[in-house]
Length: 230
Image 1 (cartoon, rainbow, N blue to C red):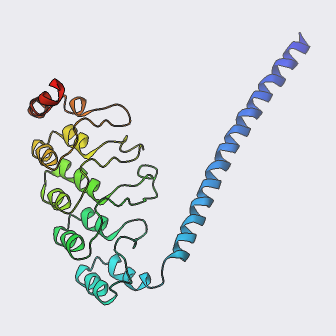
Image 2: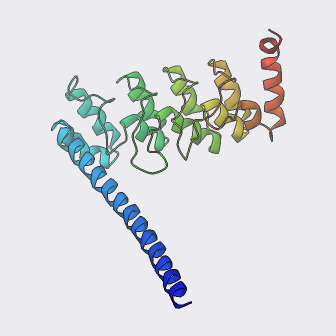
Image 3: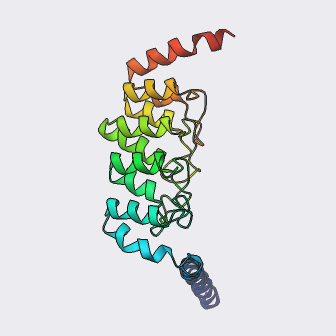
């Protein structure tokens, strides 16, 4: 009996030791990832052209007139699609602030790319989020179509698919619009050739996304009838 109890105690101790080792390994893994992210950030900082440091203070203050003056002075030297404030492009910053005039200037004068992914170092958006997709998310929340239309007029991809991450699940702008119930946004995206057949990574399509929005479902049924008949 004593041997049995001793054996049982040893087994419990062994299991606890294994659990502790696994926990320690998980903590070590997180620390290693943090160190690696830090090294990558340092490498990116070292790789940044020194000239970018001249514009950093202006970007930090969001002094758009001064930013544009600097871009004019450094024409061909500072690339608006390469420059990053941390992880964000200038166009993403303009969209984030809902600064229509700044976004319009970046798109028209400086040829900013509305589909360019911004690599944001967070667990939610670690796969990148384009300025256009942020404009879509903002419009679906606040109902402001102006920024979305501006981006579409300057080459934004209405069928852009965000990488499959915790935030987006690989959704398209159209699926996000259908989920939000924003009929005007849905119509605008269709006008610019959004593909209603594309699915998110979890299998969600436009019909499933719009299940609580009868007006959008009616529009989808009308829109898809010819294609389905074919």
